[in-house]
Length: 582
Image 1 (cartoon, helix red, strand yellow):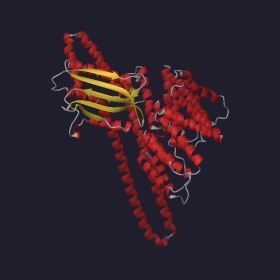
Image 2 (image 1 turned 90 degrees about the horizontal axis):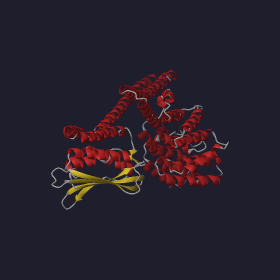
Image 3 (image 1 turned 90 degrees about the vertical axis):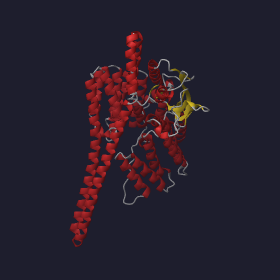
């Protein structure tokens, strides 16, 4: 639902606010003329790369357009910067997006008032998307005051819709609802503002548990979006279908949920963002679980989804090839027409045609090979990701725990039953969490406790543990990425306590902190083992530690720290890192 909320937040902007569509990565069309600036040529190249799904090349082209532009008008730079910011937004690179906005702000562009207004408008959406709600509210209020001074009623309505969303996320529900109630009474909302208002009210009703009213407003939004006569409507309609289906699942009206999930499938899937299709797949799984569909049916659903994914990329690939073939045919036809009017240059033009055909065929071969490599790379990454998820629970650990439980059954059946329950709960939780980017902190703590209790079953006299949550941490509302802490705890138990004379201990501390990208949890893991985690040769670090270290650096801008607990004797391990929250 998080992705859908952000996407719909962007859609709430009205057509009178030009920053909106580009923040949603809908590049504005630019007129093609026979003579255009070099910066505009790079920008048009970027649009083509973007439409073909090559975001990296699009990003480079937009950057080149900015560097080649020598205008002093804010409007000339706007489309270049906003397109590049949009790509960073798609990749959740909000730090890079804000830095780019700062670069745009520092340019001396005219008119100054329009330049400032544009910057603040983009800034409020970036803060909102990155979870910095207080900063988003400050920017929104500044933007609103500037609009009031300019008497820009069209954009004022859009700013109020956004303000209600920010207040809702801050928990100030009465203020948020009052804004929406006031807007419902107005009769000067344009088409886009009505749609944005309906979807915002629907979302807030949903999170308040009022699913019937949420469905009503989702359907109003759907009726408006169906009237849109452009490609952009597919994502909007897809989101409406997905939201309605989700609300019906919450109401346990599974028949209606199935109707809207089937309606989603009727949309041209190649026109729908992949993240939306992933969310709908999750709703399909929830519906399957609710209806207690057999594992075979669920596996069929997963297989079908994989086939749909393959078909999606195949259609995109086929479309690109068709465009290239069409371009080749146009080039050949042009050469033939020129041959008919220039008989005296027939031999020369035949050579040109031959060379051109060879180049086009070579280009097709190169593009085919490039697309194939890209697809193979995506499949390989998917398989690696799946292997990492399966490897999150150590197979040797599972085998050893089962052996320990088997021995315990013979001697203490009551204790065995208790630990079997812990083991099954641990496996179920890990499998469920492996499909989520963020899970509740209390669930992750439960996984850690079950894991540590099971390890104590294997090694009753080996170690003790303590898990400390500092004041101000609400483990029921905070969400974190799963399986970041467990690999370090496993290192301590499996390797750090080998050969120590005294009883081992592990202490896990979680406290509030903040980074340049938002609120985080500071995690500190200590043990009195042999210092296994410290290696002179960094290449010997486990793959899971490298994976976590790279993730932490990307998500929080901070480094993972590993040091000795006892520096003098080089024993014990202290692991410190920041965990991003949601």
